[in-house]
Length: 446
View 1 (cartoon, helix red, strand yellow):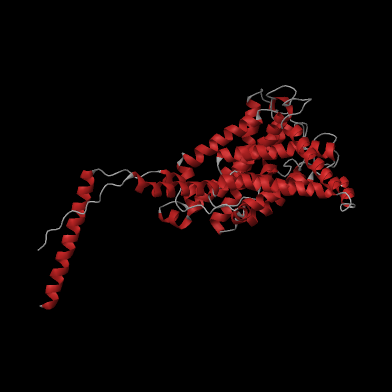
View 2 (cartoon, rainbow, N blue to C red; view 1 turned 60 degrees about the vertical axis):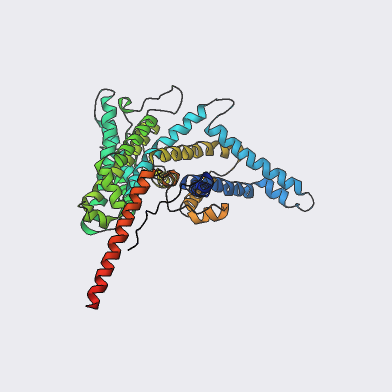
């Protein structure tokens, strides 16, 4: 019987390690270029580019220059460039910095972004559990109803009154969204259909209630207009003379709460587990129905905070059923662009806040329709929802299956002792396998 020698591989030279390192870094670059961050940025750039083309098409000067393009093509190019440059300049001065107002437009952007961030966090909670909460409008309206009642009918000192009013909005949004969770848990009703229908229920319910003496403002006639909010419940401004109030601080606090809920709490773990695989989560002992109710209640709570920001910050003199201002639907784009992460949603909310703040000066100064901003938002949703389209346009590589962190993690080198031990284990395994094969062969011969 021949003696087996340990199969010890010779040490690898640095030249032989180079191809493995190159493959590792090549995979890392594939993960970076094909990842969600780069794709989201390029989706925004592509949407702005198409929006610029639309701005050029609807401009009257460009249309006039296009009539004699073949005789003087430079006029068309010059008019198109001036239109695009004027649009972006007006948006920059209306959203970030103005020569006359300094950074005052930036404060307006933060004010516009506050409810978008809060509502985007609410939509992201539902997305984490695989739920599509399209009922942001209805939840904001019910939250506004709660906030309006507390803010206009209760007499409390400043600070306490403001806190109770904000809490009322959070509770109102959570209760209205919980109805969807209960129906889904008990009957299996689809949350998309239920939330859409409850939007109309909330709209007509609030419209009717705002015509009753408990909620209706004085001298409102037959109009649905709420009573004015007491000064003790109105958001104080952070910088006097600007639109920025403490709603932006509450939005940042909400982002921290969302991060802790999703990443550090047991409830967040259950929500993410249900979103990844509800069947496996049920097998692991997670109550799926209860998780649905909790998820939608948390989603409605964040959206209710956005409703409180609208009532207490922007329209404290008396709000109407249009107080949601389309934020419930814009929050879907914010959550998708932010990839359901707290930091991403904050930056996405700031981007859309800048688009909102800059659209009005763009319309006044350049005569560009404000609806272009809505088109840009829709294009962002389109490109975010179609990653292969963005990769095909910009020729981005397909990300690898392994994550970037795993690819960059180098395997621990084996010492000679570890190699000898591994070789001895392999030798023992091969010896036992050979012995068992010989034994079985002799048994069959007998």
